[in-house]
Length: 265
Image 1 (spheres, rainbow, N blue to C red):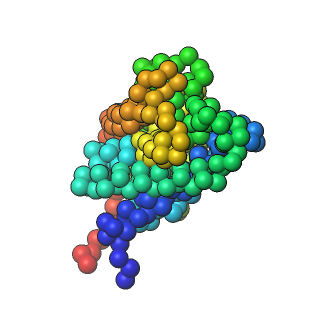
Image 2 (cartoon, rainbow, N blue to C red):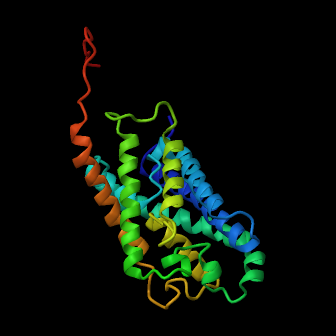
C-alpha cells in the first residue's frame, strides 16, 4: 500500500502546479522573447498546463492547483479546511519552482529583448493591469479578476458535480483545461487572467529574486501584487456560491435503481 496522506497530497499539488507554470510562463516567454506565437497560443498553452497539471495531481489531491479553488471547495464542497493553507503553500511553491525553471531556460532571450528587466518581460511571470500596456487601473483589474475567477469556479463545480452532467471517465481535467482556454480568450485583456493566487505570486516572487526589482508593482508604481491574490479568492467564493444557489440546489438527488438493494459491507 502506498502512503497517500497529506504529505502525498501536498507533493501532488506542488508537482501539478509546477507543470501548470512550466507550460504557462513558458509560452509567454516564448511569445514575448522570441516572437513565436501570439495570444491564442498563450491561451491554449495555459489550458494545456492546467489539464496536464490536473492529470498529474488529480488522483492524489484532487488537482486543485489554485488556492481560490481550495478555499471555494472548502466552503461549498466539503474539502477539509485544515488542508487549505498547506495546499495553498504547496501550490505557491510549485509555481515558484516552475517559474525559476522558465527564468533559467529563457534567461538569454529575455536579457536580449529586455536587458533592464522591465514590465515588458515581467509579464512573462506575473500579471499586470491591462497587461502592462492598456489603460486599466487596479480597480478595473480587481473587478476583472473577481469576475474571471467566479466564472472559473462556477464552471468547475458544474463539470465536477456528479449530480449534474459531469464528464465521464477521466475527461474532467481536459474539460477544466478548456475552461481556462475559454477564459483566456475572452477575459485576458484587463488583467492577464491570473485567476489563481499561486500562479501569480509564486512566479512574481521568482522573478523578483532573479533581477526584476519592480515585480511587486505595476507599470505605474502601484503595489499591485495583492490584487491577483485577494480578487481571485473573492471571485472563487462568489462563483461557487452562485453555482450552489442557482444550479446545485435544483439538481435531482440520486435515485436508487428499481429492484436494487443496498448491502452494508
